[in-house]
Amino acid sequence: MSTELLDSIREAGVVGAGGAGFPTHVKLAAQAETLIVNASECEPLIRVDQQLLVKRSQDFLKGLDVAMRLTGAKKAYIAIKAKHGEVIDQLRQDITGFAGVEVFEMGDYYPAGDEQVMVYDVLGKVVPCGAIPLTVGCVVSNVETLINVASATSGTPVTTTFVTVTGDVPRPATYELPIGISYREALALSGVSDVSGQAAIDGGAMMGKLVADLDAPITKTTKAIILLAQDMRLVVEKSMSDGLVLKQSRTACEQCQKCTDLCPRDLLGHDVKPHLVMRVANYGLSDFQGLKRALGCSECGACELYACPVGLSPRRINVMIKQQLAAAGVKNDSGGTAFTASRLFDFRKIPVKRLIMRLGLAAYDCPAPLTTTAFVPERVEILLKQHIGVPAQATVVIGDKVQCGDVVGCVTEGQLGANVHASIDGTVSAVSDNAVVIERN
Image (cartoon, rainbow, N blue to C red; front, side):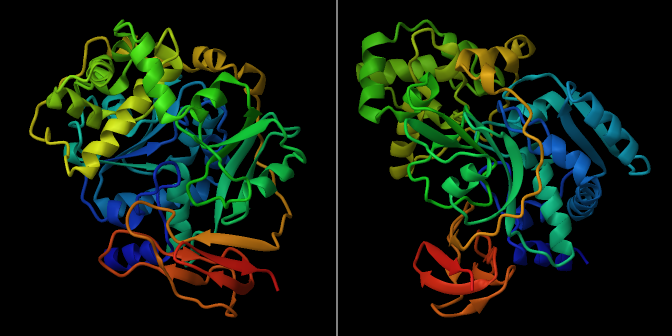
């Protein structure tokens, strides 16, 4: 039975809906003592999971039950911020009768959704630097992913994703959208007709990336589209070139250590020390071990968007170094080290309300209700790589007729990756190494 369930999840193309898109059939094939549901939604402005826990509770609980059975987990914690009192009350009623499942109330801080931070908060265990939660007997999955697991076991593949469209839009809302529609179409649903002088962020304000082309397609991992003015500090910082980031760092870094003081991974004992990485990068020191500290960076952005008093970007410096080390084949080799969290961990959590004020997003901190839309796209572009691992290989050719849910790209069994499916009925109009385009009949 476990093999059949895993096969159904693999065939349905389920990946982590709230992160980098790790294939879920691989994650749930592991054996673990504990399952943690990441329902924290720690990024400002995103409104997906809390609504799904209420509106899709039965699907969520079915997916949670499947995940516990597959991993052998005897205990599951639904980690959700205590501020969501009504959702928590509903959850506690819904899980009555589910053995081993309980709600864990978290504080309203950033980055509560970092899975290693969450594991420590819930279980008091530190995941080693460079390792995954399974190292300490734990698997972490998010709400929408478990809903997709439930659908997969009923034969329904992943063809839609839940997205909060917010920021400087007339009607902030959360939608279930066909995968492969454009960012521009998603924004139009919330009343945006002109994006002159504005920029869109895919994902959260902290870790999300600027959308380079609004006509590009959304993917399985798109959780939010935040529209902001181009001159907002958040957009300006995300727009800076690597060269400018380095120049500013070398000119203005005063080694105050605030980036390290508030680094979540350093507080877990991972010895990331962003200020020391900045020192090595700024002054050309040949401290290889110092550079390797960058490998522990989770890229949460706390250093650049909250901690640094002069607006520098240790995160971007870390990313540059990580890319260079990866190209050289250097990996994190601290797996055998014992890690102990700082006694200051609980005192240096970043309050989300204060973070929202610091980012200049207070005007956009508003509800984005889950809204049913009759939107039917005329065209979708299904990317063949929407996940960690190898791209899917197209299984269709130009002229093929497909129905919503048909496989249009698959990954060879045994490879790390995920299938992709048509999200509308239509005809294949283009196939490349990167995408399959489908136009409605």
